[in-house]
Length: 408
Length: 140
Image 1 (cartoon, chains in turn cyan, brown):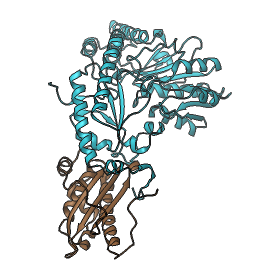
Image 2 (cartoon, rainbow over the protein chains, first blue to last red; image 1 turned 90 degrees about the vertical axis):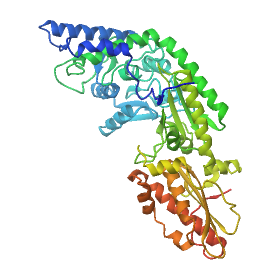
Image 3 (cartoon, each protein chain N blue to C red; image 1 turned 180 degrees about the horizontal axis):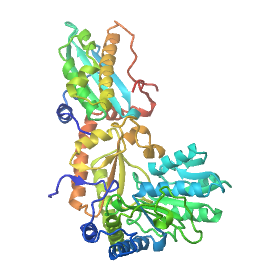
Image 4 (spheres, rainbow over the protein chains, first blue to last red; image 1 turned 90 degrees about the horizontal axis):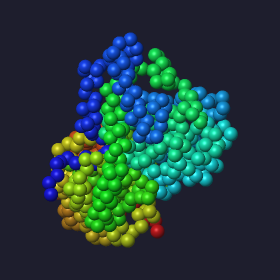
């Protein structure tokens, strides 16, 4: 078995660009450098044509009309535009927004900002499987609710929310529905009409496209969604997002979307087999490992596992030729573990012991086997030096221990 | 984050991992930290009753690389010291030796706490002092 090290299994953080995407972009840095807003000469027309082609490619991937795509600098901006833009535009109608505790910070912190400006925000909790309860959602809705924003798939645990059901509820109540679809679009089927989504945030670099470009899908019909812009200026993107368009980035985004549309089904099948192989091999080699979040409603390329009695950062140190991410945040100032895992009710100790695996287009079977075997070795070694593992093996119930925590 | 070579060395080749018989009257055990904070250290010392010198020291740590290195280093330093000398070990000594960055200082604090807790337990067993109750106990 030969694998090239280090191995990248952090595809939720970012993805390498597909070489076909790079190829499509290259002319737009040099000979086709025009400003898409230049209406008076062929340089501008050429750039505009390329942007419109990309707009259609992105729209086609999510079953939208090209006119409903607003290009942005990335999904963080898309989330901000959707939430702040709708909040400002519909303020007369109401001041209540519903979101969820496991959302990305781009959504949570945007909502927190709006709270300071007088909006009221309900943060729905999640069930043990990581999904919201539709009953809780219904109960949270009141006559001041103007927006529901719930992510399609979570960036840490890969859990897919019941988006179609949420969309149906939002439609029935006449409330706008935004979803941060960054981790899902290009990976699993996503159709704005089937799901009854009014706005959706997408990012190119999560789907083998370039960094620095994203989009917000904004529904134009039934209902026509209006947003107050965050950035004022030349009135680009139907006035919702001024600023010269990032033509090479947008061209790459379009190409990446086209490729995802073609290859998504095969990629998803292949990656779910590899993901299940990784999971099975880890379970074969180790006891007391726990999957965080639903396996049924989950992205095909995600796995998030807590390795009990072993701290995540020390685990990462032991597998330093594998790029993954841990829910333990011992390096940060707060020492707080992942808020997503905490929200599942897993207990802080298990949150500290978690690893997120994100597989992608170039992940191989050999890589998955290498990672599983390496982790098994390292977890076994770290458990041998773990006082918690020793106590547990002695039959002590760790949850009834009184721990000395002051000062830490 | 980047670890110093000394931290990496202690992580890869930890000194004195293991356990001493905790019921032995000459063994003191300190268990500090908490799983929800991401750090738990168990540190044990075995004191020679004739000389008052620490003959052996062992640790087990659940925590990041710096926590493992801090406790591993502590056991190295403890061996051959008297109980009073051991109490003089300061967390700042560990920070300096391992070149710990500011976000990892708490790991050295925990190691100092573990030393103090182990020695307090030893003294308690010897009937000398009963001041510290800093180590964890099952409540059940």
